Amino acid sequence: MGIADDAVEIRAHGWRTLAAVHGLIDTALERALQSEHGISVVEYTVMDALNRQDGWHMRMRQLARAAALSNSATTRLVTRLEDRGLLTRILCADDRRGIYTELTSAGMDLLTRARPTHDAVLHQALDEAARSPELAPLVGALRGLTPASGEPVG
Image (cartoon, rainbow, N blue to C red; front, side):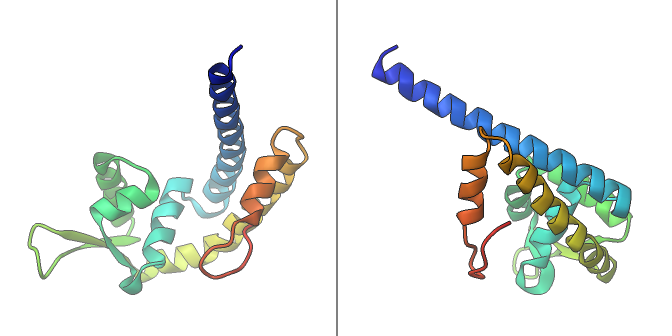
């Protein structure tokens, strides 16, 4: 194997490791959030993204990026959450073509109840992944990240 082949293999190995950690976390979160709160990981992600915005609202395009979804998948998800009374859509006053999505008080209540579950399961899943020698370095890197709040992750 040449140097270029080694670099490709290192990147591929890194990607497989990242996918393994993501899969482990996603599966654990999905089970816990569904069974305890009746929401999916992506629904939690959308509500959490909205909650982190001033005024609890975002344009649909911003929400799609925050949730790593296509525009059409975001529209379907927002419709489902709106039907459940957790989100609402608001026309942008400045641009009639723009639509904001906003958390309702029921959505905020559900998010507040689900957040401790999410955080505990995330911590447990990272602990589990850290016990795997192949995954431990990535978990260490994740735990070393510090968000704007300055508090360590995980």
